[in-house]
Image 1 (tube, rainbow, N blue to C red):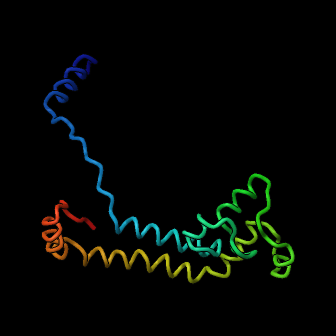
Image 2 (tube, rainbow, N blue to C red; image 1 turned 90 degrees about the horizontal axis):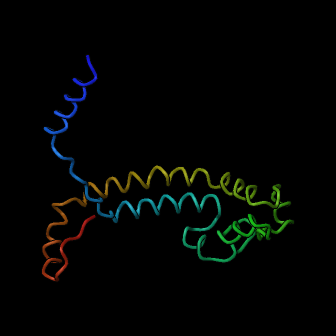
Length: 152
């Protein structure tokens, strides 16, 4: 088939097709955000020994086997990681962040595994029961206050 005939057909198809619609960004889901935070908390707690909030806000972990974000960054730039050498030695590990995280993970692998399975299942069940029919009365009350609607 000649090249011109192919080009004409493409133009003809392009003119008859519907213009593509732009999709609006999906609204931020409160339950999805909480689920992600709960899963992140389970992983951070199993590896660093601190909950998610403490990991980011506390300057030190509080013990040789709890590691904060600040201590991790300090160790990357050549500073102290806050791991007490004799404590690490008595636990049979090196006084490094990867060794401490490995120790914490070995100690907490099963609780973390249960949480990583149970959290998404629990949130899936919650989403199923918190759908529109249950939230409609709440939306009616909230509309009277002046808020458009509440989405879960």
